[in-house]
Image (cartoon, rainbow, N blue to C red; front, side, top):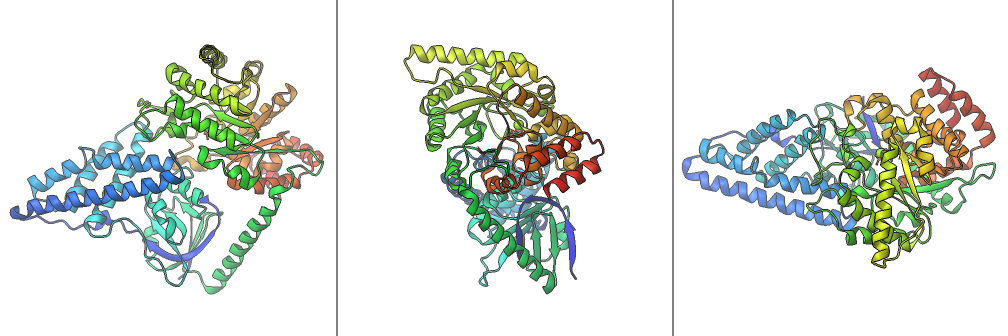
Length: 576
Ligand code: PEP
Ligand code: MG
């Protein structure tokens, strides 16, 4: 019987394929007592499984690192490797085997339950979430013990894709699927910023998460359709539905191919107004996208990915090389590098972390940089030195106080003085801009504008802080609303203020890459958008059809609306 299940759409596209149920190995392990004379053998089984999983993770890390050094994914893999050697896990399970004569699988699962319970009681939400990594590591170990290392589904001979259905997937698992003709991912848990979502988007595989009990609703080898754009799973569809979705899938493909033709079309509205389209990148590995998309430059390089997921901080030389590589690869196009935004959901296993009860409101981004001026100065020196190689601008995240800019500028002057003394080259007039992502900054722009050369609106955090919604928490994801009238007024107000002050302003949050909002932002007066490379051509398509005179008047009317339903309808009409 065919039925439909709704979840959170986190990676666009349509997948049609047969279910590969990633069984919850942990729920299925046998419990038995080992005879005293076999205890040594049981310990050896456990050690072999640990070695096998260690090897698997090292292999995955190597595959990931060559593609994306210091990426989030490789940080997650490091974290799982650390868990493998944590005394709380395997050594404790060994004791269960030795003292209670449990079989290895049972010993591991018991110990996992104990550790997970301890994680559950941690207040820090980031650390609390790490219980998922503990479960995934133990799942890998149990699979290795059962002779099924990893979650890799068998390749299908008929060429039809496989849809992986799991409770949760670790980024390591997801990367491992790369060569296995995986059509889509579907999971019980997760939100738009969950591990699965991040990796699925990177791999361009449709994914729907947050489906709660999907594993209990589908069977292995059952045909499903994953609509990653609308967040819908159709289980056991009839032939007519499959045909309809095949058609939709080829239309999407056709659209994507048509979009590619826009690569070299200048980005300008119907009125001939040029609109700057910039890229958000996580490191030098992404800069090749500049050529692929023919974007106008880099609008946001998130440097924190250089810092997270490693034991030692990157020194000045390593940072300088990374920044210079991006600037050189940009070949004269402008590059905006953001000083590191560590803290809150970007902690991973950074050595810089201090446990905080409410990290999104704590020592994050510029607050952290100013609290650790030695670390900050190293980055500023590296940035200044890189500025000798092309049109670099630097950008400061999470500004809320004039002092934060003043102190940053003092540190920049200090770094410049030292570089002059050392006779090292840098741009004396390096422009410094700031992010508007805290409502206080958006409401008191007069405090920022005299001190800065440009602004960039971080809508991801601006929405989080305006609506008091944790952007990484799937339980409140339904309240995360870019069209909330308060959010729209803060964005429109910032664009209007900056335009009047003749200060360049851009949007670099996810809203900039969402075609549903392009005309809205243009109508607010925005002329510069920065986004993930995957969205550039889609946004250009919107720009090309925009009549600024018409949409500006319409958007002014939308900004006067208070009723959310009316706002949504008006924005949909504008975009249609
Ligand atoms: C934002 O907050 O919108 C932004 C671009 O910064 P990040 O997503 O890195 O916090
Ligand atoms: Mg931000």
